[in-house]
Amino acid sequence: MTDYWLSKLFFDLQNSAAAAEFRADREMVLSRYPLDAEVRQAVLDNNVTYLSQRTNPYLLRYFFFASGMPEEEFVARLRDG
Image (cartoon, rainbow, N blue to C red):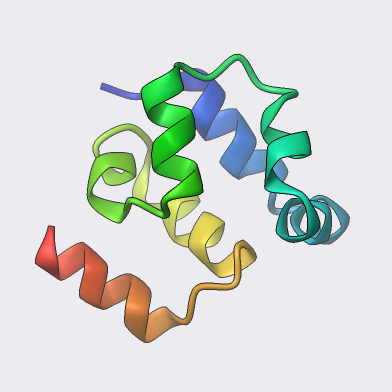
């Protein structure tokens, strides 16, 4: 099931200024989105498996790129899930 607010967050992070702000202060940026506690924690934990079930793959991949996770680590986590 797709989570609208999670997808909206990931979509918004395509903007380079928003991505930089997110990397600097995740909590502040997350406070702008009405995410369920479990979803919010998954974002903070970079839980690829959990998040992959709740947003489209393009937005998920961009989120991890914007958050600073190396491509190799993202792919490995996705495979392990």
